[in-house]
Image 1 (spheres, one colour):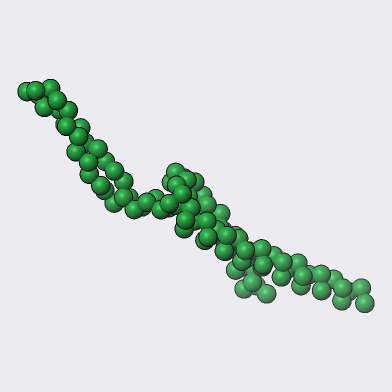
Image 2 (image 1 turned 45 degrees about the vertical axis):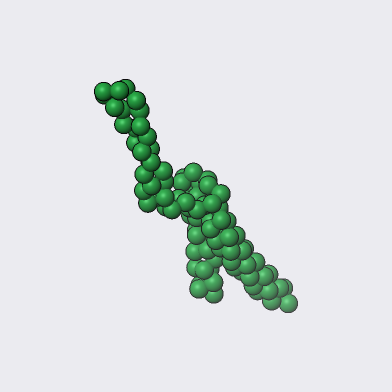
Length: 97
């Protein structure tokens, strides 16, 4: 029984942790693997501004990954709690007989 309880608490922790990471990283719908960095360079001779775009690796968790992981982990936790409640009710019915 201890293994199921560990599984349900682990699954609940994973569900909350994934949603927390998703929220802290900007709540993006889609997972991003790069971020756009714009460098502005001013020409001192002519006074024009030139922009140079550079893409740097930067992982941002999106809802496309976080959503299904959180739902699956939450369902596993709910199943564990349901099993524990059912087993507890079964044990309590044995005491009344």
